[in-house]
Image 1 (cartoon, rainbow, N blue to C red):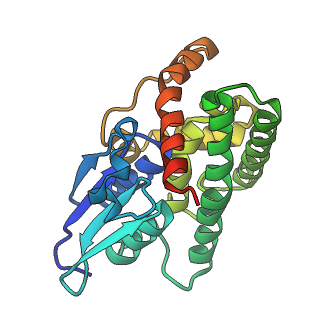
Image 2 (cartoon, rainbow, N blue to C red):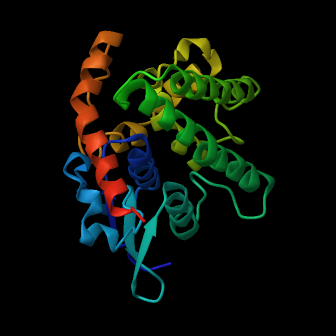
Length: 252
């Protein structure tokens, strides 16, 4: 571990972005951050691609043990790096080799391979597609609901109210931004009472509150479906433009 962290977070106000700022706040680490304006395609600039060649947020740089800068991307990878390097007291993790360590990985991978991608596609077909495609909406909303059901059933049997053991871990942190945004994906959180109780418990944590407002304060959630549709209209244009630019750059 570097003697003094030199952490710089490149992020946006998204479910994946706030995972890292919340993790940093829970660990009490000093860090600087840059707000990457997705609508302006700043994630596609040469300077950002030098850190994350995939052109997605979040990304993070730090001084590694050899004194040189390390570039990190993919939110799960960043979270694991931060607890491996800086969570020696296991505030939001468990010692490597313990049962709880591997169970935390179960739920971290569950989010990164399941909830995030499926809910992300539900967001896209529900809010950003240029035309209504019922198959896509139904496919991804139903799969997101199924995954929410898995979480809800698991949390019903949790004595602590968290996903693993007796504490909030990076697995909980990985999920909170997505579960908070359930309505945007067309999901009724009230259908999952244990998951809703977990969401409320997480949102009450000071570090979650603070980290959720990085890099900019989180906008007040739309109260009605009509408000959500209006917000989607404002975002749809740059989402579609970004897709076109990606496609044009990758033509064979």
